[in-house]
Length: 102
Image (cartoon, rainbow, N blue to C red):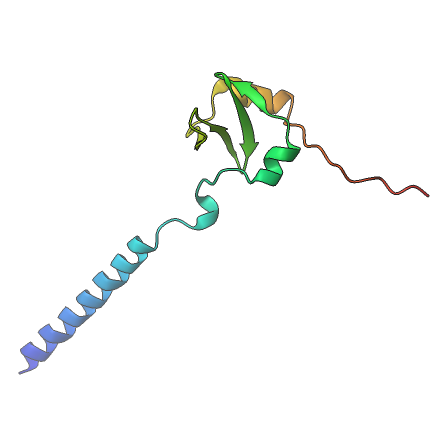
């Protein structure tokens, strides 16, 4: 009987560990690490950089751009030209807020 209980206990431990591992694998990458296109407010206030015939925007550590159908895309690896541009002349953000004068 001891062997059956011992085997059953080991089986439950292994099954629990496998279930925990499966749960961790299914959770996936945190949302902040996933790519998302820039919001409309960002596009409206940021000067684009033109590359490969389209406007590109540096947002959330990615260069994003729209394709000919209006869908958003991004570069998995930052192109050398865009990296150099970003390092020497960061994207310009506009602000429409009025300065308070005294």
